[in-house]
Image (cartoon, rainbow, N blue to C red; front, side, top):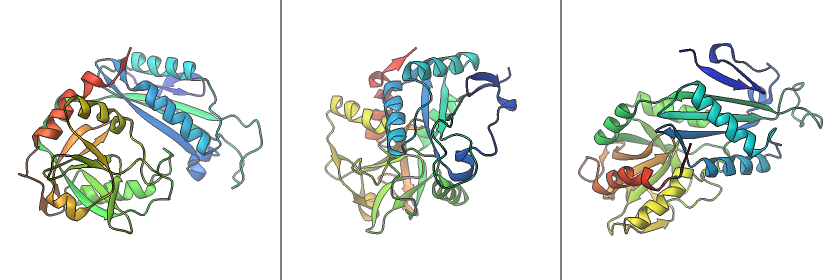
Length: 286
């Protein structure tokens, strides 16, 4: 079956999809995006993702080209046309195509809206969660507004590639004060000696993950306490457990950071339990 993409009001073959060479995202990374999980054919935490898309647009003074109701229809059409039962759907909005100039283009320049969907392998994802992942630590060299989900991701790409070359799945980014901020494409968590879940506050230093936010509800129902504060690598090395969260990973246990084994060196009961319970709490919309 040929994949289908959405480009500026048209559904076309994914292989034929394209935007202008003058598009601001291509020239300046002047765009925003969202990735939404599809689980059992339903969109997970759709409302939170669309609210965050709107926030990112406001922060960049970028006008969304269509209303949220239209975005919802596009999401569903992409899931249906690509027959995605489990996977993800992607939306991207840019400031549009205009002559290359650092200034914003003239008023009335149409924004670019694209979307696509792809199927995931649930069995492979669960196998990865059962085994756990390795993480490496790297300096956080990103711009100072990672709370905006923009397409300006080159430092993230470099970190992710360095992790792969080191035999790891993810990189945890460490700020100039020695605190872990987040992963290159995920939020970072540890379980401390007292059993509390510790994660960096959702300030301008990290992206406020939709899965991260939902985990507060899951944790509360499990009788777990969450503490929002920065933590160091030294704390992470001594943690009972560690894990990452994100729309593409849900809850994924971390069993090693650099050369340090975390806990027993195997996925722990807290992370595994949160993962198992997640979809019982995350709103799923058809």
